[in-house]
Image (tube, rainbow, N blue to C red; front, side):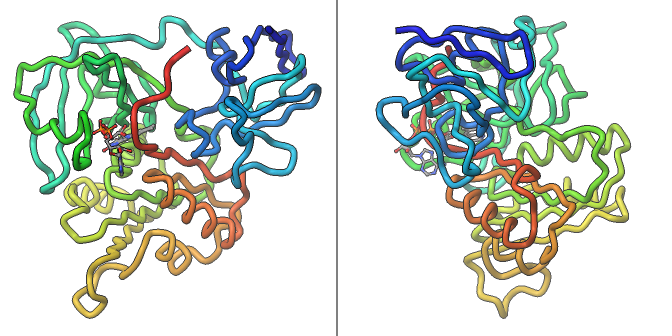
Length: 338
Ligand SMILES: Cc1cc2nc3c(=O)[nH]c(=O)nc-3n(C[C@H](O)[C@H](O)[C@H](O)COP(=O)(O)OP(=O)(O)OC[C@H]3O[C@@H](n4cnc5c(N)ncnc54)[C@H](O)[C@@H]3O)c2cc1C
């Protein structure tokens, strides 16, 4: 059965097939609602329904703890009647914006024993159009896809740089060290909504876990190129120091911006052996170093449990729910595109 979905205060309306999520139906109809993981973890697609009823896709939950009382996650819910949505924002998709490329491996280095820095070049003359903070999908030969955030700024558009942590037994990431210059990969981009909001000069706190540093690096390099100045704090966490695998990038930002603060958070290193790092997790470092987050914006990138812990810490420090933006590296194959 098909239901009609409208967006409040607009002339937008589209159909949603039974069992299809509201988010998938919107994307299929060329309407982009905010989203990131599409698996009910990050909370980016939380929005209200002012008219009509929904149920969980496959009878699952329709909300998580990121939702306020009147919100559901559009990626998890399917209509059981016609609906009127009130999303936080929406825009018409530009069909020419997302492209598939056959990219060539330019270089593939180890930045840490379990992290590869993979640089891909697009075919001559082609450009990758994306916003800092967005991600791409690698198309594997079994038809599945894996998501990776661009670590380079959008101004460097003749290729993309990815930071890939080797997941033991992982279909793609555990094999990534075998890629050699000249090998090719099919990639599609851009995806995702965790990008910097313009017209906002409030202090930003970036919280990254491991390779969650990749989208943060893209955003910070982009800000540097655009000469944006805002008070900024980066909290980057790993188990051990070698997990903070790109110190030169951080040193560059420290040199360029006088109001850039860097806090290392190392969770598996004895306190007494550290003089320049916080001994503990990133959420604990956030509480310790940023006790008052009113009128701040927080961008958080990393694993689902890390993002949940940081969200909770940020709210306890006074951050407004709408000022928390998370790119959650949900494990496993990417959700199927409509
Ligand atoms: C929006 C988005 C952006 C992402 N960006 C990055 C990025 O920039 N860098 C990066 O390294 N990863 C990133 N990821 C994660 C990435 O897409 C893959 O999930 C990851 O690399 C594992 O893929 P794989 O094929 O090696 O493992 P799979 O074959 O998919 O999984 C193998 C097994 O490992 C488990 N597993 C998979 N990933 C993890 C994990 N992270 N932790 C614990 N267990 C896991 C799976 O559940 C499964 O049991 C991102 C994910 C999303 C959704």
